Length: 423
Image (cartoon, rainbow, N blue to C red; front, side):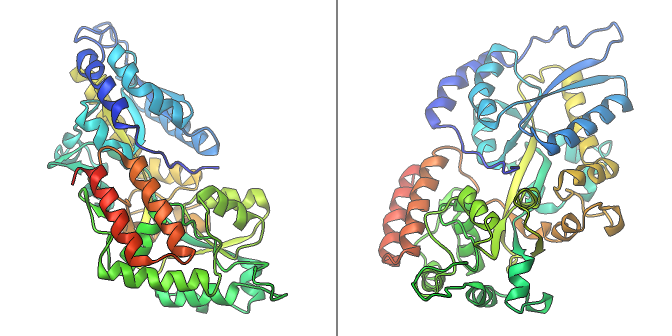
């Protein structure tokens, strides 16, 4: 499974290790990686892609190493949790990575601890050409206080994937693709089947994980509301009340989806053939294939949907000009045209706007690439307590989708979230 969602480490972990990061800050300026012998400068890269996508990543790393003789990138794959556990202490000890893949949920916290360095030069220096073709939202989301701290790595809009057999059995065609949230809910009702009338559908219209903050954010934004933007929560708005009333009715009265599901449970339900649609990232392609489910894909019917957002970050290990130059060169290479065509073999869409339809080897990836401009990170400006915040909103969403009082739950959760945000 290619789902790369990770939580921000607890604030205490960041603070405890912060002194180590700032004290160690990688190797000294006369580090042996920066030699005058003519040997390439070695850069260590950490990532968590351990399946087919990891093979594609390694292919691009190898191509970068072969393309020049100034730097040698050594890519190390490890579990995502291991990256979180080891990153700060390894940087403090001076044996961490120069380049690391992380999400937006962790990025700002690491920046504030001095673990991640600005890569604004990547966007300002004309020497780096890949940034001219990136989706604007990808850069905006990783820019804090006017400085860009990351380069897009693996990013994509979540999409509506559907079981083609169940879709056809309901008499639906591409002409029935929903273009509004109202239409999406109506289609989900059509696809919900309770043949014996016992109150429990044999097949649900959609597997929509209520224990997922990204899903909640997509629902709220699609109704004209907000979740958390720039560190400010706006849960208890009139727009959100109206939006959640509509979805609550669809869950409770029409049973379009079961509740108490995280993203993994939703994928399992869809894979079992007991849900006709699912909101998910590009890893649904390989997940569905593993279950033997034939799928199609369509856009979430709004201009705002959650997106997977993994970035390359330059760490405090880059304390020589040679190392930083190599890190920026690799980031630029990753987002060059040919590299991004190669990256589509991982089933992620490209980060660039100029990849043409005939350059994709998979039609589904080509389709979802057209949705990239609607992808947004679910909560911006959160540098700590992210796991506590999402736990509160996940619990709230489940209670709402099971029939709980919406205004009360929004008001109570707003207060709790504000306390975690320091409001």
